[in-house]
Length: 333
Image (tube, rainbow, N blue to C red; front, side, top):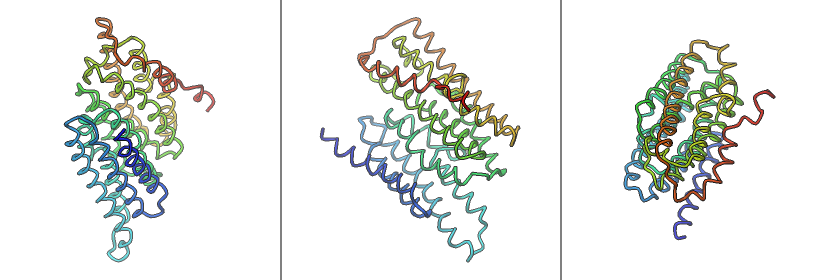
C-alpha cells in the first residue's frame, strides 16, 4: 500500500500532461504538456524491480529530450520566421522530426526497441498506447493533406523497417516494438485521407494490442519472455493469443482487417505505389505474427504447462472476443 500514493500521483500528472498538450492553443503549451508527461512517466518506468529499467529510463529520457528540443526549436521558429526569413516548410519538417523522435518512428526509431526490451509489460502497454497518443494526434494535424516526397519517403522507410526489423527478433517486447512501428505507418498514411480513418486505426490498434500485452503480462510470471517459451501454456490462452495475433495482422473477418481495408480503399486512389510499399511492410509483419503463432502451436502440442495465475484466464476471454471480432462494423459502412 505504501506505493499507492507514488503511483497515483505520477499517473495523475501523466494524464494531466497529455490533457494539457491536447487542449493547448500554442506549440509552447503543447511542449509544456509533453514535458510534464515525460517527467511523470520516467518515475513509473523505474518503479519496477527489474534491474535494467534504469538503463531504459535513461535511454527514454535522452530520446524524448531530443524530440522535445526539436519541437521547442520549431515552435520558437514560428515566431521568428518573419524576422529571419525562415522557410515554413523547413520549420514544419523540424516539428515532424521532433514528433517522430518522440513516437520512435524511423528514421528516429533507434531508442524504441531497446527501451521496450528492458521494461515491464505494464510499462510496455503504456509506452505503446498512451505515450503515443498525443504525438500521434499532433502529427496527424501536421501531415493532413501534406502528401510530399519527404513524408512518402519517411513512411515507406518506416513500413519496411517495421517489417524487416521484427523478423530478426527472438524476444517478444522488441518484436512488438517493430510491430508498433509498422502499425504507426498505417495510422500516419491514413492521415493523408482523413482524421476519422486515422482515429479508427489508432483505436483499433489499442483495442487489439492492450489485451495481447496483458496476456503476455499474465503469463510472464512463470515463463520467460522468449518466443520459444511464452506459448507453453494452456490451450485456451493459446487460442486467445492466436486470435489477437491474426487480428493484429489484419486477417479478415477480424477487427484488425477493417481499418486496413478502410485505409487501402482510399489510399490506393491517391498513390498506388506508396500503397504497395506499406502493403509489403504489412506482409512482413504478418509473416512474423504467423511465425509466432505457429511456434506456439507446435510448442503447445509437445508440452502443456498450467500457469499458477490461471484464475485470471476467465478475464482474458471477453478481452480477446472484443479485440478480435469486427462486430459487424465493416458491412454497415
